[in-house]
Amino acid sequence: MNEVRFNKILVALNAILPLGLLGYDALRGQLGANPIEFFLRTTGVLTLVFLIVTLSVTPLRKLFGWNFVIKYRRMLGLFAFFYGLLHLTTYSVFDKSLDLKLIGADVIQRPFIALGMTAFLMLVPLAVTSTNGWIKRLGGKRWARLHKLIYPIAILGVIHFWMIVKSDVFYPAVFGTILTALFVFRLFPKLTAGTNAGDPKKVRQI
Amino acid sequence: MSQKAVKPSEITPESTYLNRRNFIRAGIFAGTSLATGLTYRYFNPISEKEPAQTEISTVSAQTEQSTKEKPNTFEEITNYNNFYEFSTSKGRVASAAKGFVTRPWTVEVGGLVNKPKVFDIDDLLKFDQEERIYRFRCVEAWSMVIPWMGFPLKKLLDQVEPLSAAKYVAFETYYHGSSTNPDVKLPIGPNGMQSSFSAGIDFPYVEGLRLDEALHPLTILATGLYGKPMPNQNGAPIRLVVPWKYGFKSIKSIVKITLTDTEPPTTWNLANSDEYGFYSNVNPEVDHPRWSQGAERRIGEFSTRTTLMFNGYADQVAGLYAGMDLRKYF
Image (cartoon, rainbow over all chains, first blue to last red; front, side, top):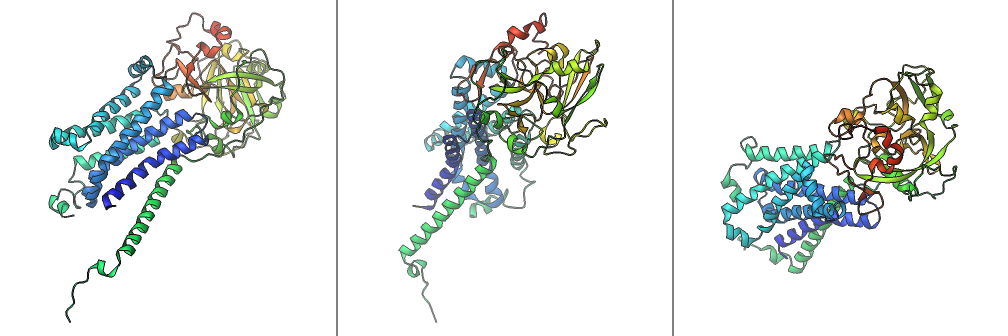
């Protein structure tokens, strides 16, 4: 088994492990008195975690020269989609009994649901076009432009989380802060210069 | 002396090399999984649960106000709580409130009354206690059925004789226990409670009712549940229960009751007046920006059920709001 293959399995295992533990706790009846709400919240948080980890790939490459991490970015992004899908499915099945009318009413009446739904809908084309075939079909440039959608998706995700919290905004604030830091890095590469940032030659050598 | 370059593969036999590599990989596998697992566990700890209890009520016969619905288990009722003074996580309130000291405890009743009085909790526990099995509907769209123990608030209010000018009743939750009234005796200090800043709402928690709501026979001061003294996480030693209003109106761990002529401020209304009104009657027709109030999840059930007007107590309480626009007075 070569190094990349091993690492891919490693990343996949660690990405699926939270779901394994969640399922294990569910089987033992350890999700508290309202297991659906717990499952919904946890899958939502995991979606945000994977969005942020995916967005961290480029800064990690530029700051530390860890270019190898690019090989696992697609998988990380797909896990964000996977947890997002679980999150949306849990909501649709258990909270709304798969009633499209109820879901539609929720989207209209509750801005935080509308934001979450929008973010998920934007994530769908990214997941679909994540294959090598689609990268070729779209062409690298267009593909990259499309995949910039991950920025608004992550912003909407954090706002969505912020809006459902009643008063204790600690965790949404943590996600918001990390996201802001990642954006600052992208928008102002000079601020974070002094390492490998903005030196393509140096990056290429590694 | 010239030397031919030696390739690593000539020194280390392939099998040893592969074994070592596999060993390292197994280590990386185990190490990262452990780190991921522990991170997950750190954020989702297994909480120490209140042990399940034999669900036998030892108290007086069920009164006619009680619902015939099956109550939630003691375990459910005592491990899923909104009590922001202890934690904003419903699953963690029970453990956070473990060390909460509730003696000495007094309830100061005053304001627009003839006979203001500071009641000792042990005297309040001598009031005739009856069991009331009520539906409990949280604004977060979940619900329970809870076998409370307690007595009508009216019994207490009758003792202090409200003045005719009194129109409202204000309640206050324990917070740090200090008071200027020498008769008030409470544990002094944080007593396990967190800061306002951590909770995101102001403390002490305050609530209020209109006087006629407070005097309604369904409105009780609860001192226990399942025939046991009130668990800390549920609002020990004494709390309000108003079954036709959203749960946050049923203020916990009460230390002060004041009769007033103006509508008293209420904590969630102060925090967010667009979402939480003074009345906060359970009303499936008045929507909330975050939770659909048309349906609820009964704890212990997977699907949802329809929310009833006034939480199913419309027959008894609808008259209190005759002629009022409940969309305006939500």
